[in-house]
Image 1 (tube, rainbow, N blue to C red):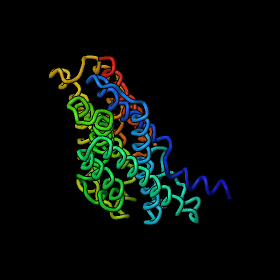
Image 2 (spheres, rainbow, N blue to C red):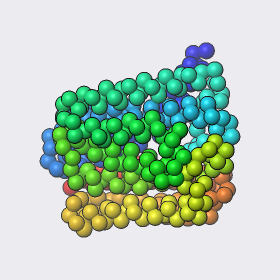
Image 3 (cartoon, helix red, strand yellow):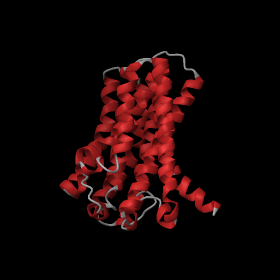
Image 4 (cartoon, helix red, strand yellow):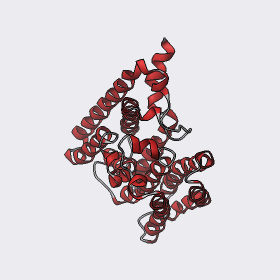
Length: 299
């Protein structure tokens, strides 16, 4: 009984994917350091807690909604897509996922209100957009090809990176804005490539993301375009002297990007053959922003 309770509570959090949070938080921290701000550790940790709670909340609510809609029972699950399978294994505990999502969302709101009081109302628009993204993602944003494509990247890119920068410094900055584009494109691509194994189940559930609206060829093209945009943004901001030359460390992951793109091009319709390339993109999404944060901090 205890194991079932824990599984229904912890499983929907999707713990392996939470690694993305400290990576994106580190970008906001590095941008603040690069711009010459003294960092209070307590504020950095509290910002990280809020960001982590936001990711837990959207994950748990997504698992709950996918279970309630029946989508979880139709997906061809992989280690990187199709949900965790926790709630189909423990259907009587599905409400635990809902509670986890709502409690985590409450933490996000409380942390956000604290920083609004501390730093000012200029944080409110960004915070409200973040909360709306969490609440609306599964039921509504996944019905729009454009919003479904961009919402994850915007959340982990501009919202998280610039949000952390703001709560550490009290204002927005161009360094954080420039750095936020890499997770914007890579996280959007992460959700996009993970939709390939799920597209028929998603169609059944009434979703209308890019692959369903415009087809696999458009999805592959956008995936490649976003990969190019992530690296091009780094080169552009170095050329404009908005980011230090050290951020060219991000180019070390280019071979992984090339492998993932080639794999998607060849195996978009073959789930078992596509799985290694899903893994490659996970590595890409974690390591590239981490190298970017390291390069900014070194700069």
